[in-house]
Image (cartoon, rainbow, N blue to C red; front, side, top):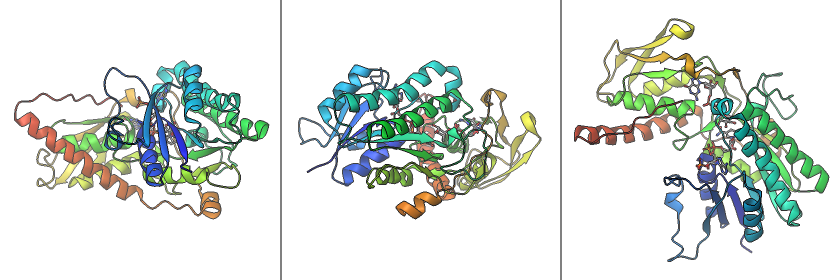
Amino acid sequence: MTKKALITGVTGQDGSYLAEFLLAKGYEVHGIKRRASLFNTGRVDHIYQDPHVTNQNFKLHYGDLSDTSNLTRIIQEVQPDEVYNLGAQSHVAVSFEAPEYTADVDGIGTLRLLEAIRFLGLEKKTRFYQASTSELFGLVQETPQKETTPFYPRSPYAVAKMYAYWITVNYRESYGMYACNGILFNHESPRRGETFVTRKITRGLSNIAMGLESCLYMGNIDSLRDWGHAKDYVRMQWMMLQQDEAVDYVIGTGVQYSVREFITWSAKELGIELEFTGEGVDEKATVKSVDNAISPAVKTGDVIMKIDPRYFRPAEVETLLGDPTKAKEKLGWVPEITAQEMCAEMVADDLKTAKRHALLKEHGYELPMALEG
Ligand code: NDP
Ligand code: GDR
């Protein structure tokens, strides 16, 4: 029997990689996409199947995590073996701007899915994966963080995800559902949203290399993160639903770097050596040397990174470092791609786009250059 999976957030970074992964495993994959005034399926367009010409095994449904009846109807229609709840307002800084919406979608949205599964009598059939997060650890109580580390959320996003975490545990314990949390540390890729820090850096510096922008404005570059590759992490999401019993796992690499280091690596990939001077809001990065074959628009002495306090958060998570020992020992999961390899892949991809845009600009076409972070 072909297994059926339903993915919320299929148009996002993880959703797109997970859909590819499950299709390759022979699943029939259903995804929930939001109605938007512009196309928002860029990350899954390459796996789109025209219902008029194929026997579809990848199907998209309009829906929203804020809409109970919609979610219930989709689950009833699909009768999924596995539900992956990846949909969320996933930007921590934005959650301070839209706390109520974030609570509704990220917190109550999870309850809506679990309740739909229960209401439809699918609690013994449908396995449930919840996209939990290292942000739960927030103001860290122990380093490195593992499954037993106490939570201390520091943003409306993290507080909403904490509700989602516990309601998932509660439905497992109350109704015997196979429901589990992957507590995932930051993971990135060329498909990462443009306003998350890694992609903001790789895209911004690539644009600077090609003369499309002149300076990257950053927030707290002292921040420390445990960065992995999204491809490694979606494999683990699937593995977590294939066990004899539902168990929560921390997924990280066990290695930590600063945002400043990520800037340094990205610049190096572009043939640029940087010097950081100044402190706090006065810190800046100046070009010490440059290989103009890679970055034709950059000169020695250019200041290409400055701090802009508007990117500081009302409450910051300064440091996160995962201890994935349990996942390694019990599931045999190990990340295959290092943060540096991932950074190189992201820069290569963004540089390709920047070159294309530079060519368009040279020929008189206007480009949208929004760089909010
Ligand atoms: P993205 O922001 O790339 O994707 C989020 C997805 O959720 C998008 O498809 C988005 O749709 C969808 N979405 C947003 N709001 C709603 C809504 N109201 N109803 C239905 N769908 C909605 O996130 P990632 O792929 O990076 O992350 C996947 C999940 O994992 C998220 O829940 C995130 O919070 C969590 N997580 C992510 C980590 C990371 O480092 N990437 C680490 C730990 C947890 P649209 O495309 O239309 O915007
Ligand atoms: P995070 O990711 O908040 O950890 O949440 P993000 O990449 O946004 O920030 C990481 C760290 O970098 C600092 N930072 C900046 N961040 C952004 N976005 N823009 C900037 O200009 C900037 N300058 C410095 C931040 O302050 C922060 O400390 C991500 C999301 O994917 C969540 O959904 C997920 O749950 C967690 O990772 C694990």
